[in-house]
Length: 163
Ligand code: FES
Image 1 (cartoon, helix red, strand yellow):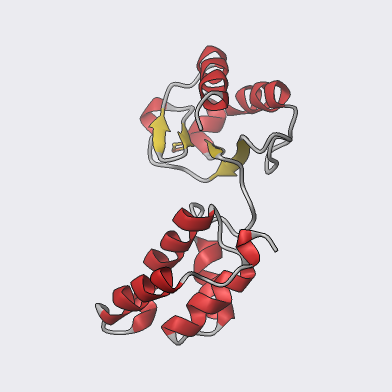
Image 2 (tube, protein in one colour; image 1 turned 180 degrees about the horizontal axis):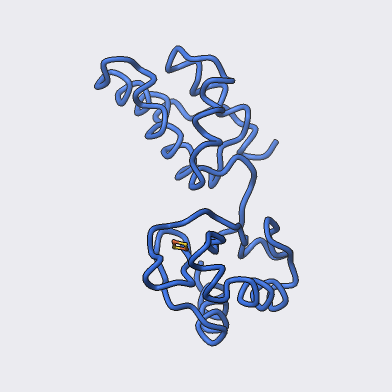
């Protein structure tokens, strides 16, 4: 059984209930609860989503609607590092497509996929609010702007050597 199939640890369940208790309605803690789950497991499995929904008194479908609305909540397994390359208009105009092709070629994957060694996932994302430095991307939680191929090559090397 993988960790994503295991029940939420008691301590995490208690943390989620604690968050819910601070809200006028438990569902107000939905995003924070899912972020806790993701921080622990790397993504939010359907089993875990159902458990959180139960703790918050929501249906799994309602909670899944919230989870899938937010690009930074992952409903499928991802690698140790996630590169989210913006594909909105400013970045597209500033050369996002050839950059994406370079990145995918260097990693041997397509957008939406994870490298075989489980190190890096590449995901497209809508505007991340860094348009004045397009093309832009988020790498884990760090914003990068004015991205070029040299920057991508350096980043790939760095991520491969970062646990
Ligand atoms: S369009 Fe890419 S950061 Fe805004």
